[in-house]
Amino acid sequence: MDLKKPLSLREVIQVCEKWRGKSDSLLSQWLSVSITSFDSLSKAHSGSLVFMGENESLTHLYEPPAAAFCEDKSFRASFPTIHVTSIHSCIHQLLLHYHSQFVYCEETEVAGSIHPSAVIEGTVKQGATVGAGCYVGKYSVIEKGAILQANVTVLEHCRIGKNCLIQPGVVIGSDGFGFFKEGQKIIPMKHSAGVVLGEEVWVGANTVIASGVLNPTRIERECKIDSHVQIAHNVELGEGSQLASQSGVAGSTQIGKRAKIGGAASIAGHLHLGDDVTIAAKSGVTKNWNGPITLAGFPAQNIKNWRRQVVRERNGTLDFKGKEKG
Image 1 (spheres, rainbow, N blue to C red):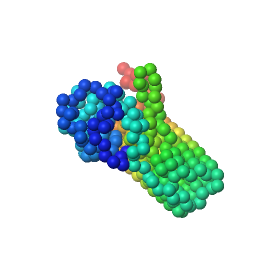
Image 2: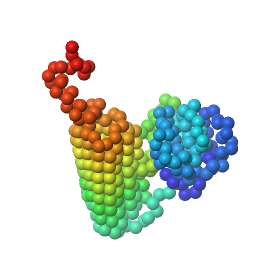
Image 3: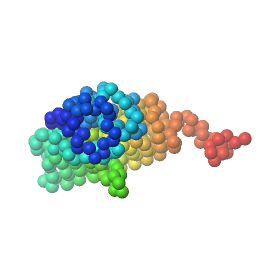
Image 4: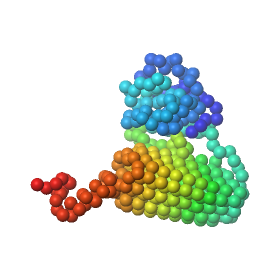
């Protein structure tokens, strides 16, 4: 999430003072560091303020950020690190406090073919089609050639790329299933970053694509998504991927190009899947995989190994723990 004007690290820390832990001895030297955006770790750049939970590392860090909030008291880095008791509380408070200072699309053009019953608060470009009962939220953009069929909901801060087809009942940009605990309360996380669909994406009826928190949920060009699919917050789906009905991708998972995901397959959160990964129907993916590979079963494994296991089970050569008898 880019900011309209830079903030000092001192200003940001003051907003989250409630959750501050023990101060770094060098922090006083860094209070004037300029923050230009709030980002997830994988999107870090020189002006980023990033947020690191207990189980995150710098493995996917392509460029050092300006500063980081961190829950791991032992973590040390060459950039400013603010230790806090609750990463999620800090993110939530910062998104609320600086909501009006984020850079959103300011376009207000309303053109194209729009049904009289549609409600448009964002931008509809010339050549787009918006069907009966649709809603396009503030700061959202529907690009040229995109078609929203009846009763599609596009909430705030979303961009629907050129020539996309969105079938009836689809919801894009809803808050993700993200909650954190503060004391005895369970609080819903604010989701401000929206969703970005590339060109020529096809989305089937009643599918839901949730908004990102710090960076948009991204569906790259020419992806094809069947009906009744769930794509959670912060997911990135690579170009040309295909998801069959009732499949689901949990939050913050990154999937490479040309993925093929079978019906009712499930992918856990915070995973990285490489290009050309195929997942058989009803499989459950629980760890990272590099492609090209075809996975099957639960927990998902190379389909060749899974098939051998199924044969052994049918022949009665495996015990209930999956080990060879005798």
